Length: 381
Image (cartoon, rainbow, N blue to C red; front, side, top):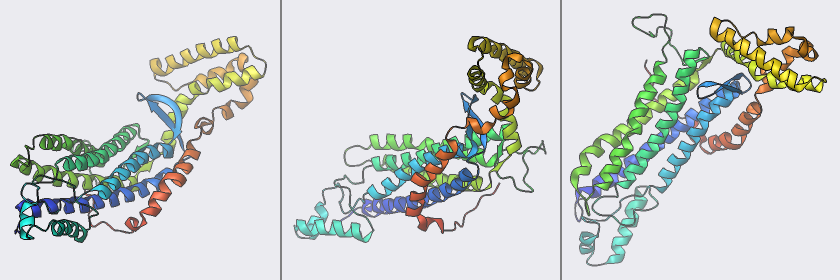
């Protein structure tokens, strides 16, 4: 094995094989997570919920549509993982400084045999190609690229679980909670989102790893220095292990996400009266009302209702105020229908259906062999 080579011939090529195989595991778990989230998104595609911008109530969306935002990120990650697997080159047969001098000597100066050996080694290890040129090692820029892909998965996971943690505070959506699980050692009533918090903690670690790979690559002098060795033994395996656990957790969370529709609706109805005023205004104008007068009446009622909500801590009574104001008599008999949440979700439901049909289903079909693989690892909380 060592004839005509250095330890990097074995070590670096083995690293690339392990990286490729590890990326396939990450790809499988991404596909499985997307499948799990698809079921959740479809189930709740038409359940109206408050949208948030700046974490302030905004135009309605649906619980399922929000889930597609998480899925879209993971689809982008899946695309990058797949590309990384397809484009990953083997180091191949390069020799001590990358010139293949020792192999050329072994083959008595036969350049063609050296090239054939390089190609054959790659084929036997399941690679389409070797990196075109190298020093003693493969370019450490490959490590940076791989860890950047893992960082992308971590970013998506952090965003999803950050949303779930905020929704758990609102008591709208909660992650799975085992029958005997303890939320807090001091406060027995609590249901802390521990799985999502664990994801965010691990994701924060993975997101920081590419900088170590970037500095390692930048500091490789000439054909090679050994200051790449120790850090690679840490960041590469730990990056994959942490991402693997993150995806286990995401699938577990997605499979057991619990939605509280009545709480979701209550929060919607707290804000919807303000959002529905434009519709009420237009309906009254259609019935012959004076727009300026109507607008001023809505403005006054809205300010007064807001003061009651914020200053007195009472429910939003804007609709009651409008129902008692004769200026809005034209809509008094249909106020309830004008503030139906389903009228304010736009194309959210249709977007979920189209997203599944056009984006998700083809990818799941293309990778269906992964969906039947049962993971032997689990989640303990």
